[in-house]
Length: 571
Image (cartoon, rainbow, N blue to C red; front, side, top):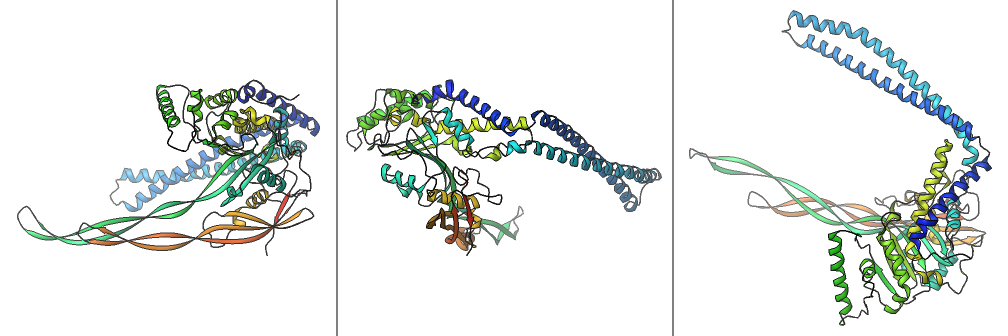
């Protein structure tokens, strides 16, 4: 019988980390054996290439030295020649020295020029041999490089962590289930474009890893200047009065709206437990030790106590006996005290605190947590630089030992990043004990349509330059709408929303040193919305083909998981 994960930190430290590492090594060994490559031959070839590469580095260093010396000789010759032609007062000895420099530089320069050519030929020879050597090594590794499954990393995680599984892609049915069963609000997607998505389940309850691009209005400061001039009568030390011209550069600035784009990775999770509870919390910024942190904790606890005693507001917040948990978790805006306590039992408090305080095994208190009834959002900071969708390209190499190291390190990092993104959910026993009555997440039917999230991922995979309006000068938010779907092929309209720029001019009154007000011109850009709609087709279950565009840096699940491909169609 599978054992639920109620102690995510200790089980990762004492069990999962080692199990995953061992499974990863075993999987690479299986792939190696299945490929039938000659590992010993590849190691010999790699050693040869590295020796050639070392020779190439030496040859390049020698060529740089000869070029440097040749330049010095040429500079010396030019200096001597310049002195002879320009100076008319050279002594006989100085003139003789210049002549000797010129005479000596000719054979020396010719010799260095010959050495530069020889060194260049040696460099080209080494470059050719290194390229040929790598080509041989690539051919030796071809069978293994073509054997990595797209989902190898996900399956390793599933073998490691009980009741955790990933989907092939995020279907429209599953998105609809999130809306209908868990109350997912599509307002979340307004003004945002999905860059990547990976869905799955924890004991039958759905989660979605995602990354989105959004725009918010910021400001930009524009500066202008004006040079003014005036005359002043000035009295000197002798009492004489004369007129002097003064100049001053006066400046002015204006702040104007500007679209600012940002990317955010998150985890969304649906669960029926505590269905009427909402709350939010941010990273506390607290540390386990230190006088300053002790004072911060004491001050925060005093504020929580005051908030708990306040009977004049609408909050029913009641401070729990575990003050340390309250201080660290700090969910003071919770709106259902009974359900909060059902969710955060003594065990959940202990395990959550362990996650928040840990700085060695996991990532500590690095996540924001927002619960909105049945939908939970996590925003772990460590996902910012994480590669969540690991593709086969991450493992391919011409060096077997380096490929093995990459396979181990990339997969282990993926596991740690994903596991600790989900860990705050795993720390709540009620979440794993609660499962929806409908068996929504048992599998994905192969003929199911992918959701509009996947359509947006596909569009972003092409890059917004493929869809943006010709006058757009900013990034574009790509939104999609399904037109029709026939025989597994969807026709989608992609609308790129961006902004064009119009040059504007403001005049700002500035008081100058001449005692007058002046209108300083300040140029700025007004951003006006533009849109462009283009058709795109998305097909599930077909070969992507060698010409298909690459996935983006996040990619998150979908388009090649079940060999889904997309094509851009221009009207």
